[in-house]
Length: 69
Image (cartoon, rainbow, N blue to C red):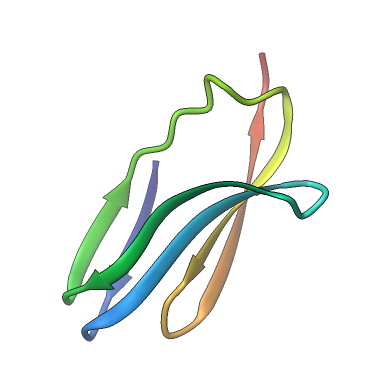
């Protein structure tokens, strides 16, 4: 799960990319009100490897995670 906070109304995009930079999934995309949000993402369909969550709002953040099967 991924948690992020929004301090003002803004459009937010949360996506998952593989190590090659290919987009795997769009998890959230749209307007958000101020608050804290938690995103659930199932890795059941992914192969073992390194992936990145990207959060785009006022700033862009990346967070690496590892899938091991």
